[in-house]
Image (tube, rainbow, N blue to C red; front, side, top):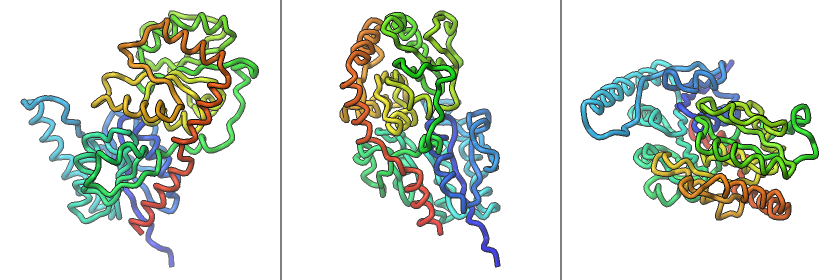
Length: 354
């Protein structure tokens, strides 16, 4: 007699930092029947695999002062809470897994109202507001960084790292079809929204890197008005690149924002980095993330307000000319990398729900 499949609702929305860890965790739950909770017109419509049916609710974060806009957000939140409660009941779900963000709030409240277990994963060193407020409501809050533990004194926490896509755990194909094998490679990553300021500094600094023999793979994002400002045989620009695992493994150095997802990928691929935290990230959480890597010796961190193209150019040149320093930085990433994070999270969910 066949067993009824264990049904799990995953609530993850908005950015790769929320979606990729959730997808990686879902890949480790092949014995579960998984459906997805998202928001209309966000990245989940493109990134969530088709085998996970996608439900959407119209919910927003509380980022503004109280006013008529707040009343509209509250009304949408109340409606989303009713919708998620109904979905969990009619779908006979056995639990909820969420990676935080504002979609987590109605999912957590609805699940607890119905007596269902909830596991929340927080990837940032400074937990988000939803995690800090609703973490104590969850059965377990799994953390990407140990630095987050003091902010969640009233929640049951466990440090598991942050899951990465399965491609990062597999052997990667060589990239010699567009990158020579014997040249240093600098990869520039602006995050899912790109980074116009960083992009401009890179374009100004890159000629000195070309003279040193380096190639630059520049992931510009799709919001850069000056994307055609630089052309050079050693300069490869594209909005995004799907095979990030292979690209970061090939890189000698990364220049990057400090979103938790990108940092996890840098750690897993043992890629030294120069980090420039996005200064307008909520509560400056990217600086907290970057500081974990700086303290481990895996990265150099520059605040955007303190950086110039000349400073970036000289720091990269210094590292390119210091192979022993790069080797030490690569080794240091091992102290912040957790290679079995997705498996740990899958086991947590399985043990709590089954």
